Amino acid sequence: MKRFDFIQPATVAEALKAWHPGAAWLGGGTNLLDLMKGGVMQPDTVIDINRLADLRGITALDDGSVRIGALVSNADLAHDADFARDFPMVAEALLSGASGQLRNAATVAGNLMQRTRCAYFQDTTAACNRRAPGTGCDARGGVDSHTAVLGFSDGCITTHPSDFCVPLAALDAVIEVQGRDGAREIALRDFHLLPGDAPERETALRPGEIIVALRLPAEAKGFAGHSRYLKVRDRTSYAFATTSAAAALRIEGGVIAEARLSLGAVAAKPWRVTEAEALLVGHAPDAAPFDQAAERALEGAAPSHDNAWKITLARRTAIRALELAAAGTPARVPALPASPFADQDGDHAHV
Image (cartoon, rainbow, N blue to C red; front, side):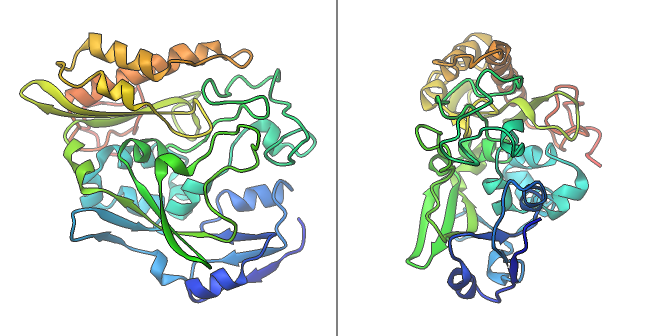
């Protein structure tokens, strides 16, 4: 591992002052440290932000929204009773990711910032425009079939690995960031960038900015009774999604009054198509509108090489997530959160 300086600032202001090109923020370290050990990331300075008290806490705001500090762990957020009650599909998504040990360490901001799990990105001998701009993309025509079917470019065909971000996109989450020029907000839907001609630019963060909090609007609580996250993966636990979907419905008088649908593992960002959501409004929650919405959500999807199966699977995942949402949010998170094999009524609480 490359030698680096290690800094532990006491305030956000000190942290921002310490940052320079070549520096990296350290929260839980569940992604950064692995990448450093493999030589994928080689910062000359690591800025440990774990002493920044302002980046902690789950706070209910006066307007009904909820503010989550950047350093809140995935486990603490998922197991917070009030949060899980108001935003159940977000809790389900969190509990479907990684292992219990990793969820205890991983942070909200780290989850937003985690980098692709593409094997060619992780392999420093391979060509990867995200890791080394201008070198090419060995994943194109490569052996990995778990690549993007939407929003990819000639320069990059990777997918975003997060479970957490998929329901956040559906619920209009907002990210609070701070830099030397002041504070600003970024809608989560706009935070992760499609590769285009600059795959190395992965998020809308400006150089030196730091995530300080995540906020979910009060309106998102209106979906609590009918919302689910569904994750299809190569094995039931400790695996990234091959496809996933977050579905939320507001049902009034047996008719869908409002809908949210976001797909994961199909693009370099969570994939939300509001036109697909609009197709559900005014209909009873049944097969025909679900099929139509899923078809619209995957419109324009194309295989990059040998992953045509993923388009079909993503469509079926979206339909099944909508069916689960229509059936109602279980009283407790299933023992196998987000799994198609879960006891969907939630009788067996997650351990």
